[in-house]
Length: 339
Image (tube, rainbow, N blue to C red; front, side):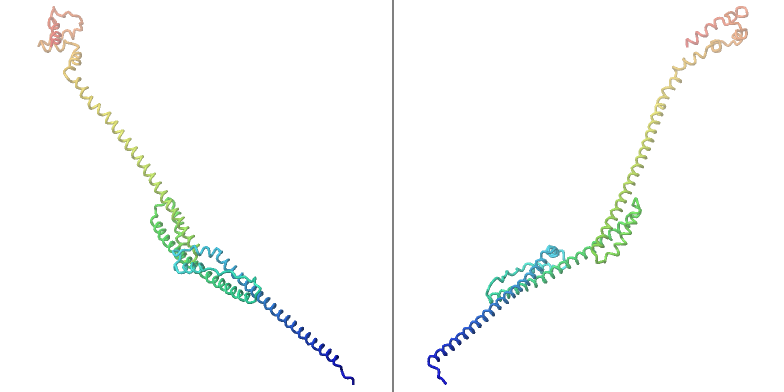
């Protein structure tokens, strides 16, 4: 058997060394590749975790923002302590709404440690938003509930008072309305309101109060209408009575004016008829034949004046021998007129 030479052994050693070095290099490369792959995988996992945390934070933020931008929250924060039965709920809502939101944290880093730290902060912020959303939502509901409770209580009290006023009006208006149907309508509204005064539906209670208001207004208008009608009738009656009285007074005055001249005229008119100046005017003409009055007053001879009246002689001469009136017939008128 041929023995290997020294040169051959050296080559073989070199080959072995080279092979070993190659194996080591390959192993180192593989190890480095594995390490690099593991580091890259961990970074990727960290980025994924941070991104997922950011998504959860985004959802929590959106829910929180939807709450505080909603109509219910905006309405609740306007409610004052005077509008609720317990003012503590208003204080709690104001306090929780005043808490400052956390600062934003991003995932745009390439360091696994930094990503893990930011992911923790993001999760913490998510918890804050979720907690405050629940807290503020509870506060809002408490405030609204307290407001509604006081509103119901006040509405019930207002309806009770309105019922009392309506009953007084119903009783007082008996016989004083122009149309009694208005009182019937008010009575119907009173019956409806009486059934709702202890109810829980604020709208129905307010509707009942509105119904009473309208019915009471109708009754009051009817009362006023009757008062106006009665006043007008009274004024018309007073006018008629005044006119009648004025007519009576005018008639009385007319009668007084007509009678008074008669009373004042009669004495002045009758005095001339019966006084001395009237005697010559009426008595002297009546004595148209002086033959009857003058002889009776101057001569006691009845036979002498009888001759002219029986003889029918209308002349101036005597029937028998120159006897007759003589100087007596001519003197009698003279004596009479001389008087």
